[in-house]
Amino acid sequence: MKVRLALTVNGESREVLAPVHKTLLEVLREDLGLTGTKHGCELGECGTCTVLVDGEPVLSCLALPVAIEGRAITTIEGMAEGGELHPLQQAFAELGAAQCGYCTPGILLTAQALLDETPTPTRDEIKEALAGNLCRCTGYTKILDAVELASMRMGARK
Amino acid sequence: MHPFTLERPRDVATAMMLGARGAPATEYIAGGTDMLPLLKDEVLRPERLVAVGAGVLDDRIELGRDGTLRIGAAARMTDVADHEGVGETFPLIAQALLAGASPQVRNMATLGGNLLQRTRCGYFRDVGVVACNKRRPGSGCAAMDGDNRMHAVLGGSDQCIATHASDVAVALVALDARLRLRSLDGERIVALEAFHRVPGDAPQVETVLAPGELIAAIEVPAGAALARRSHYLKVRDRVSFEFALVSAAVALDVEDGRIRMARVAMGGVGTKPWRMPRVEQALAGARCDGTAYRAAAERATDGAVPRGRNGFKLDLMVRTLVRALEIAGGQA
Image (cartoon, rainbow over all chains, first blue to last red; front, side):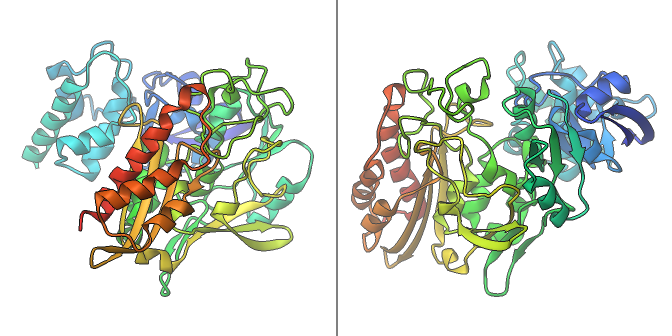
């Protein structure tokens, strides 16, 4: 059974005709061409497929898009504004907080939701917020450093 | 995934009518954080899903004037954990919620769905394994002589030793929570402790829910708040995003260094969230000190049956419980 989906992705209205059992992750990647959202464990255990729905991190591999119609979906493609990297993206690049990079989109969006809610989080709060995002390369230290750096820069800019 | 149709009923009555019919094979879906993995792994192969999240089922969280906490079944884990009234009156519930899953999952998963999540037994979740009485009644149990390190030592049968994985259910059982269940026949109230069933010779039947019946709300009685000193301690292989090896929910009513009343339940060790009445009795009237905690905690393993690799849980249960009691009750 195909259904017509009206999704709002990165501020744009998008219409898709897709089988009802297709997950949000599959619709984003295959029907909307937004391949920045990564396909990891598919079972909700790795956090790689994280997107924001109304500003909150959710797992696109466990979401049926029909349940998210009318809500604001943000993927990694929507994070930079007007060609300018988000301070988190800038900090991750400068500090080498990515190695293979596969987990990075999910971590960036999860960190963005944290900083939107808690502009100056403690290190423990950052760890707790990122507890659902696995990284097999970095050992996390540089990721935590980069979130702290972005937080400081965003605070200084205000 | 096996293809399915999806119904989005306007109200709970329509949902129950759809769910109560025997055909086509139907499952309810709310947050989807357990349903989607079960569908992807083809542990479940329904022909139809009926969506019962917020908008169909109640998602409000209310602390009533009489002190009763009422949580709509569609309330998300995040919203319950962050609720001010929950944090102040029943911090045990918030602690247990935050010890479970990950932030992303908590942003999606509902409380009703949490109570109904299926076991994490690897043999149940792997359709390539033939022997699973829960998935294929009568096929045997691969965990009996298999990798049963995570499995239950309480409430098992020779048919099934799978644990119930919820953290918050352990806290809720300790606090005497009850469920409002709704079906086409009306509403009934069932104690959470009596909601899940031990496997016996029918491990495929996990709760007392009738076909089509739904959890509408969870209620925690005001009296449970008297046990103000509480703690949820979860011991697991890694510190985040992992299920419990052993967990303990403890709430104590303490006066002048003595325990008037104790509420204790444990997770990770039973085929359902496991209340510990013998531990509670041993604590009632006892002084808040390590000797009393230890003597009471040793009652937790009464009747426990280890099976091969999960024998370590017996010692771990006692130690976890002692630690939780020390944190909650302190030393007189």
